[in-house]
Amino acid sequence: MIIHPVILIPKLVVIIVLVFVLVWLHSILTPAQWLLALIASILFLGVFFLFMLWLLARLASKPGSRLARGFVVAETSKASEGYVAADPSKKSLVGKRGVTLCMMRPAGKVLIDGARIDAVTDGEFIPKDCEVEVTHVEGNRVVVKPMER
Image (cartoon, rainbow, N blue to C red; front, side, top):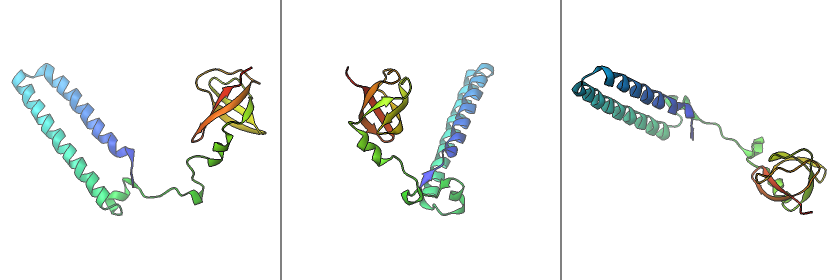
């Protein structure tokens, strides 16, 4: 179950509006009145957060309910449907050598075994047509370094 990030936006909006109102009230109210407004705001935020906790608990306990369908992503991403996080064949590129097809600053294209591959460096710039070696692969990120001359 994944809770959609839109559910977090109302909390932030309420807090920001409340802070602006309190700053504005501080300039027009007496200290006693402002303290009362501050206490009321803290109580309001407490009730608001308790309501949000109740709502999240309800969504987690009944993911198939009508209320939860509006907030929860029910679909799953399966590998059999073509969803993959990283290409496992890229691990075999470690140690292979290739040639940069463009200036790598620090990202660019590399030609390895006749295949154009998106690659990055560890921060250094590598000129075009420079021989490189794949040092490691992190998910879909292929990291190369220039060969010693």
